[in-house]
Length: 315
Length: 175
Image (cartoon, rainbow over the protein chains, first blue to last red):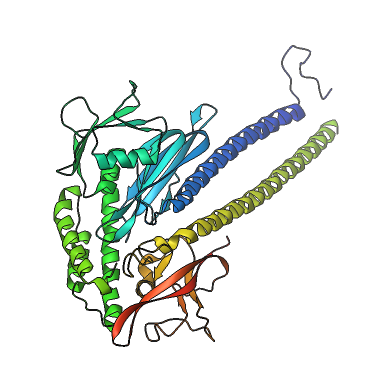
């Protein structure tokens, strides 16, 4: 009998049809499971890449007009890690956003970075949670360079201790739940930001000398926009984004330098043309925040000259 | 004779199974191709939707980005004000800004005072023109926003600000 599987002698005797059905069945089952796993992984990667792109797009409305700062929040459906990457390749460098979401209790792994040339995101290496706060401020050097965006998780609390009045006022106007003034919860997710020396602080700020000390590293800043960047970002992210901002300063300086040619046709002088060229070269050679002082002085002097030409201001 | 019959029967079965295997493989390949086609078209749809969303959100804010905005060149700061001179210079250096805003084209059209014919601006005919096109592509799928387009003008022996109403348009690619 074809379907018989045991012989008279008691040996296992499997007919070819059975053996074939078993092997093919196993192969089909294996392929089905393998394909399903691959499809699920691909779907997850697609969702991660789509979320990263959507977050980047949602940063567009954070472009400020004449306000000093803007805040908003995003809530994602599952636990998410937003990785902040940055590189200085090309004319403007790239802002890279990568997403990893919790699925069936495990973090998804994706190597797809979504890149943007016109965004400057300051955050830790990654922010984790479901709700994230986005706060933006314009960075002027001396003309408006871009809006810088600070990304924080709602789980991380930043306690600003003894901040200058101007900063306190700005923070209280922002009404961002995870930034507290002069109080700090006793939690490992609380980051103490001190503006005065002494005491146990995670981040120390010397507002007069314009530097932030964080994790044993010093980050220099020129204005409040960069100070917040140094507070909310890792030093690697901060230095990289600052260099990217200088890459944009370089291009904008060239743009304003060329604008003087058109302006001269309407009778406006081009007194700062050579200053802008020199400033563009300084921005090009910018290495780290330690060089910020010298370039800031040049920016200030150019700004004074621009403001002096009242009817013919370039910016 | 019996052996020969058995051999032929086994051969027949092997043939049946081979055909069966080919049929099953073909079936799965077809199902796979069908699945991939659906997924790719879904993905293209999502990519297009994201491009559109980007263009829609960007157009409302683009006029305030430093490459376009008037800043304080025309008196106090103005919202949704585009500096025409800056945009002309940007047009000349657009190769440096390719893919910077991730849109396929940016164009600004003067709509008031109304012009009789459409003249695309170049450094040769500026400011006697009414369309500043940053990239050499036609505007197809677009989102737009009304802005004021300002420049310095020299007349009656003095420099003054001249602002006109314009439409800032962003074109995006349908994937």
